[in-house]
Length: 197
Image 1 (cartoon, rainbow, N blue to C red):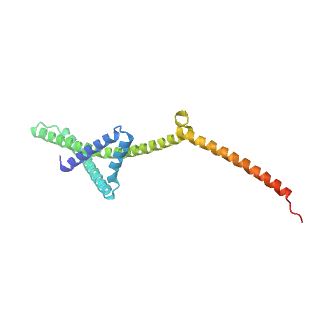
Image 2: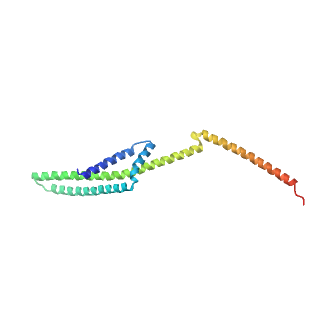
């Protein structure tokens, strides 16, 4: 196998490991840490350009290997159509079949690498959305627990706040009574002490 196909195989193995890491059922805190660690290089513009170049190179290799598969398959069918009893034709046919096998291997290797890249990008975005959604759900549940009280009853903090609110309402009623009393006293004094002209 050529060096560049060895590199493609290495990328495929790395993608399989990364997909396994994304798919494992971690606690949310660990999963968030893993996603932050993995997404750090992708925020670098030079890394993104290099990754796009590598994927473009793999795409070119895939197209080339598909072309080779068709060429070798056509060559194999042309030799199969000829009925020859020579042993040299049998050796040529086995050599053509070996080339066909290598071309198909390279095609599947590049194709699976590209396909797994698409799956990984979608899986990563889904896992990130899942974490964000779970965080929002926890926030909403926390807010609803504050409104209704924890486990159907009032928590100690909510009960204390309700007592303070009741005390403030009592103070407000007392102030209203005092204000109305002072207002009536003022009106009584102002009516009795009218200026004489």
